[in-house]
Length: 123
Image 1 (cartoon, rainbow, N blue to C red):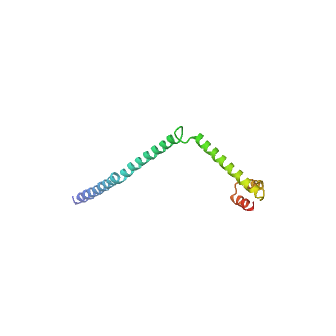
Image 2 (tube, helix red, strand yellow):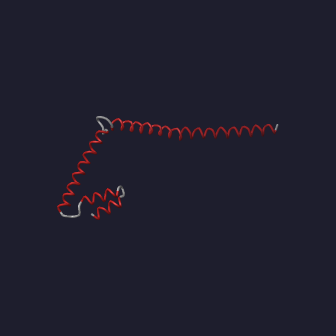
Image 3 (cartoon, rainbow, N blue to C red):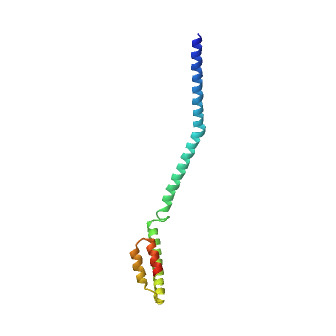
């Protein structure tokens, strides 16, 4: 009889411990993990909606489309060319080294910023 009581006591205390542990895990999941997941889902939906709206408004007739970007690039290109011509005219009128040499030097430099800087200092 004593053995049976010890066995049932150990079994019941083990079962109680197991139930308490499962209850704690369930409570943590319900009160901590679930709200975090819900909030993450809301943020994801809002982000996706913002991105979708950005694409819808960013392209097409009402937004900046490819054609608008192309026009802007052409306008900036024209302004840069005007400024280069003015600079060349100013340099040629001062009888300084030919701007054509500067252009050739920059073309030879390619995309190397240090070489371009040396060209501008030199010419």
